[in-house]
Image (cartoon, rainbow, N blue to C red; front, side):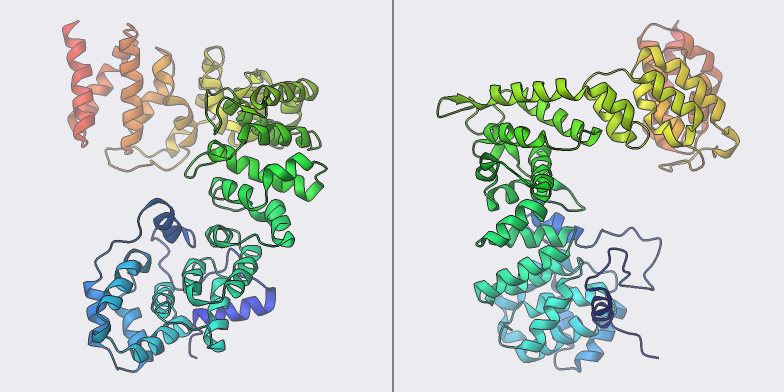
Length: 507
């Protein structure tokens, strides 16, 4: 039985469910041990953080020239056999430039046929991407069959960016219709690319952007500023009276603006401090939980910075919006009773709760430790909270020793990244032991014997920290250090062990 192409399988799943599920597998026989990008991630990273793919296209262009004129299906099969490890995103820009600059060397009619064959007949993701790349050389607006096939492929995050690139020659209204349709269907990089291109030229689109535009599975900062501009964020906040969906969307946009990670956010928004003030006023209607507290913490951190936004003096029409925002934030925090909210949410939203407790310097150590004692495997991730507090560190180290099955942790020299077995409690502890001379010796011994370079580095950091603090406790492990130094395979670590051993011999 002939294997269904990626296009056919997408057509089938969209016909059944109306969209492509996030767990939909495009290549059923793909290698399982190969590190893979999230759908659309490579294109997203290249598009947002570089000047595009700069790969060598000579071999690929030679392949197209060599097989020019052959039956497209045969070329597709050969391509999938010989180029299964290719990355179309890396060579796309270069390939298109090569073909455009040397048009006389390529049969355009054949290229168009090959592009459609790759798009709709490919069983490999990269074959479909190459087909979409080649199709961007042509104005296919008048070809309904190709146009509809392209829109269907766009509903899959792996191909969205390629499809959007193909819309260059389409009428503006038709372009925007596709952008909006895909933006509503997608959740990841595909949505980011669609929303960025979307023109918010109707009230329907602006309302959707406010309510749903920023939410994605990659990072809100990619769309925070984009959505704020497209939905007239400040104007809408000034108006007030946000309904539930609108407030949820406004909160997403504020989160995206505050992240200031890979993209500019609140610092690039005109009248950002005024937007924060009006958002805080509206946010009083939000559910009072630790997710909200974490957002308030981020707002506080930004307001405490000097001149972090446009019009950094914080004044518009004589109003100091920064001070008004600070006052509003202070009143909200007082009304919330942050500690009670944190303790209430500690079990159901532990990451938010611990983050808020750290940010607002609220001591929850006794309650968190009690939970960790009862369910160690659930809560040991928060070891950093205890290890950052000197009064809690010894209790947590003792708890780790009690719960850790050292026999399950691999030993022996090696260059691995992680040792396997029950390793996270050790991670959460040993990286902080340089602060506490004499504490956690048994865990340090586990790291010294580990095949993981990172763990041996953590052990070295702890022992060096003890020595720098004037403690001779590290010398109790002299024998283990000497033994590991003889077999150490990492040159940088070998030098660290040598320095430790030499310092002991001089004392």
